[in-house]
Image 1 (cartoon, rainbow, N blue to C red):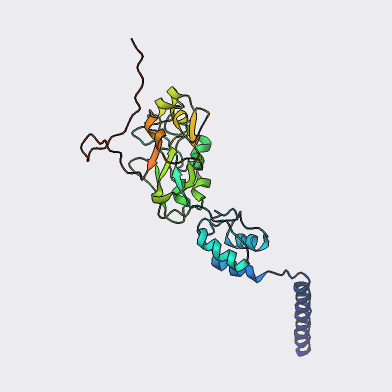
Image 2 (cartoon, one colour; image 1 turned 60 degrees about the vertical axis):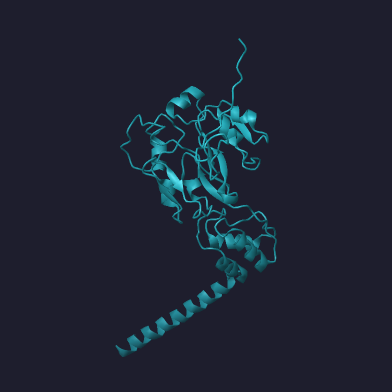
Length: 296
């Protein structure tokens, strides 16, 4: 009995030794070398793992940075230029500084201007609603209002306004990671340049219906009248599918397009109020263009 136990112990010891030798040989044969710079770069990155850089996570992005000869087109939106300059210094490579951007909501169809015509009883998710339902209003292009964008934001930079039913971006907290852009099934969220004092001008509508139909669904819808297109001095506005779009690369923030928009579908943010010199300084007005009258 004692001999059988001893043999069993010896056999198990031999098997364990053989297994350890096999594992050692396999680990050496299939060993994959990892550049220590990858860990160094990963520590420099913010660790948000938001995929705003185009990679699934910071580790993957660090591998791409280390493995690429040219990183001028790679950028971490959360870390910004400061982090990218640190990475470039560690790798001895050159990066291209980029202007900061911020998320904007290209829909202003609140309950007051875009009345509900039906009531949705399904799961409160924009992704699900967009697949099986056109929305609770007659506009099939605007915000669904279920807050998928707010749910995916890791930086608490968005919230749903209970009064308007629309998401609101907290500019100071927005890191431009782009997760809200990916989450929106209606593509109403766009990253636009964050100018000095966060000045922005953009069309707050995506309705591609013809003017009358769009206006019936939402009183501040773009009706494709082309007045903004005609007056823009920098050719920053294009017309496509009955809809105006302002290219931030060419827009000089002159606000001429805002003045001529008949439905107030063009949004301007953080500009000082306009004042009429001939009136009381405390009264602000919106200047409307004077239409020429035909002679009788």
